Amino acid sequence: MRTLSTTLALLFLGGALRAQQYTPSSGRELPRSRVTVTSVPFDTDEPDRPNRYMGRIDEWTQDDNRFTARFTVPFAWINRQVFLHVGHATADYEVRVNGRRIAYNNNGSSPAEYNLTKAVQEGANTVQIILSEPSATARMESWREEPAPSFGDVWLMSQPTMYIRDVLVKNWRPNAGDDFLMAEVGIVVKTASLNPRTTRVHYELLAPDGRSMLAGHDDMTLDMRREDTLRFIARIPDTLQWSAARPLRWTLRLKTQHEGRYDEYIELRPGFRTVDTADDRLLLNGKPVMLRGHEASPRISADEIAALRTQGYNMLHLLPGPVPGTFYEMCDSLGIYVIATAPIDTRSSGRSRRRGGNLSNDPSWQGAFFERAEDSYHTAKRHPSVIAFSLARESENGINLYETYLRMKRLDESRPFIYPEAAGEWNTDRVLWR
Image 1 (cartoon, rainbow, N blue to C red):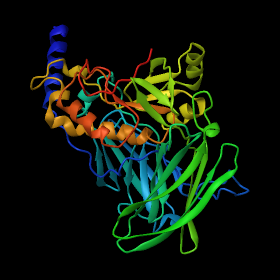
Image 2: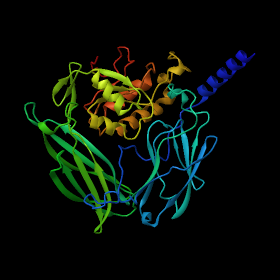
Image 3: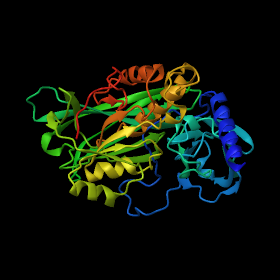
Image 4: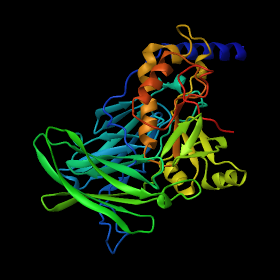
């Protein structure tokens, strides 16, 4: 009798999951690579002084799938933007602030940010994260094994009305025989103001040994919630490029200034290198690289990576799943190549391409494939260790993966996009590794 009851329950759950339809995320900010803001100048004599523009939310009360916490908006954040960062969650989820629905996130496996400015008040506030039960996206995440409701790191961050939204890096070698490459750094600036606003953006690029190699500033004027990109180009000699053998990282310092007052400080650690392919071989800084890859969970530790290095592995092919916020930084510093993988695994839907079968051939879920691939890309794009992007794992093939491949290739990205289970079909770039 118990076996029959279990079977009926599984059939009912399977039917419920099939009935779920894709609901696009709403209320999220555009995905970006990790940006953290400090109120402390770079040359301060008190490097450990508390950062008044960031704060973690650690104390939560749980009621089934509903998590609630209180937080305080200080006076220093008035007339600034207030962002909530959620690292990941075990299901799609809704965000509520002071009882008001702010956003819905279909992709709980990637970090997401939410602009809470209009929903908060100075002083005490309440935030709720409500995980879907059952999850509408369970068929996209077949690696999960009935996890208890939970989520990753959550913090609040304050940025000025006109703020640095993202930082982009593009590298190229002007001529094949050159002993240097050119690095273009793009500083994406956005304004939340309805009126024209001018902000001065300062930048400084320091070599791995700490020498200041380039510095400057530019005044940007934006209106009506627009954004634009300030770009500068640096010449990077071959001796200072990033590679697995020499994982050299530079320091990029940014600060914004409005009406004489500095509003935010941001420090990043980019590495500069080129990635391309020729004859199915990966080229790093113009030279072929013999890749020896190992499938790995995004939860792999630095000690485990070191052990793999002693065994001759120089590349991690990530399995789908949430990636810890500092993972790519760790790989940059350790000098290990990475293939970042979108959190898509639909094997629980079966192998059929017919209607009601695998989600990869169900056009009504195409938006979910796009969303997850783009989230994964934007999270990892700035890191020199990331040499390729994987669209999915164990998800059969079909229209959604065809269109996702085409969409990602339009990013004007030299790094390959692969799908290991393409089985000879065209929607994957070929990269050889052992």
